[in-house]
View (tube, helix red, strand yellow):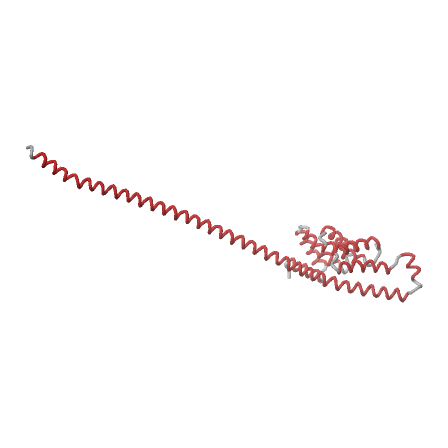
Length: 254
């Protein structure tokens, strides 16, 4: 019996060794599996971080694209406004030159008449007003306007209006005073002079242009609805005028 006990112990030991080895193998497998899971979680987290960063980059790119599109729109609007401003400026100078030539012709005609009348009319004129000085004052303001000295021109025309209230140049003086003031960035005062031309000399050749100038002032002052009404009134009252053609274009009419 004593010899049997050591043999039994050896048998038990042999049976337990594979079981323990299997246990150790399971623990190692679990450890490796857990490590693999941890690695996978880390990689997934990195991928998610990269994905979030990529989405942020995409959003930033889209925002930049939207901003660029907005800026392009603003540039197009600014370019269009600049083109329109340059066109108006060009039209203004062309119209100015045409009208000034007419003024010069009128002045030359007046000077010739004064020379023909001579001494007989001179004493009576000297007792009242000096037409030559009236013409010189008007010419001085006109020349300042032609030279682009808008403030000087505005001062000259306003002084002329006060000095020569009964002059035949009054409609032109008020109109060109308004034009000079508008070019000098004083749209509010310019609108007053344009309005005076429209109300005081409604049948004058300058009345349509005064209405167009008034609409420009109203637009500049931020009153677009009133500017549109003025343009509509211009088209209705002076449909065949050059100013009405410009008004129709701004109103979008054919």
